[in-house]
Image (cartoon, rainbow, N blue to C red; front, side):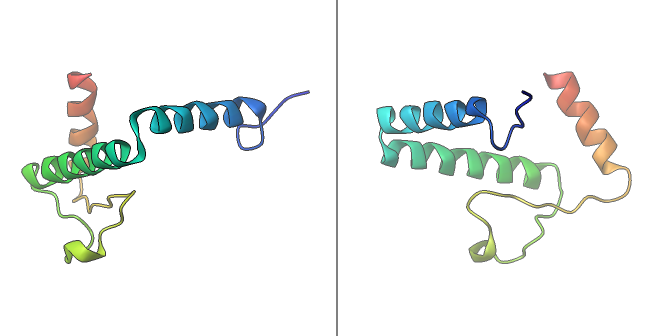
Length: 85
């Protein structure tokens, strides 16, 4: 039987391990870490000179950062990320 990612025991196991990690460090620390990551990603986007889709920071999603890419920029960003890895 082939299992799909969405309904598999493997996926459920991953979710449980992530939840265990969050509970091990504490919800407050896990939330603070996510906030630091979010701030770092948005700072990098701003440093690259790319606009974040929403003009008002109060409208930003807590889990997703959408940005607008000018023509040709996506290729350069992906190339830079691959070189950095």
